[in-house]
Image (cartoon, rainbow, N blue to C red):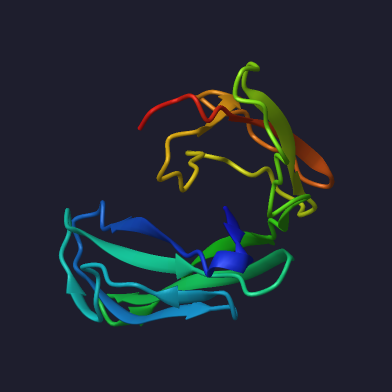
Length: 178
């Protein structure tokens, strides 16, 4: 899966291993390999796994760089004391980066005639990263109540990566009472 490396995002996946036969097996090793992967709990451990039983292995993925990375989950086992070909599950993850900027962090509405309609200014959010930016809320720290977000309204569109933009229209109306 994809992980935003800028926010130290991790994801945990659970894999189920089942002994669908009638013979008991012995789990001899559980190894997670790859720099972006680690074991994250689960019920499967070394030791016996009787016929018809199953166990889980949790694997956490946390890429630290942009781009693809891979690893493996390997479960070694024996049946009736004989080593079997290990079960190998290939793991893949992709590190992505959202690089968000805003074109103006201080909007100056200037001198305003209170007899006029609300004055509007546009601020633009730009995403220079490689992945879409999912905006879940827009808010203004606004003690007077005179400022408001005119557009966009929820639900907000995703801001595509590699130069995607989202214009935000902010209104100033000092006639609005808080």
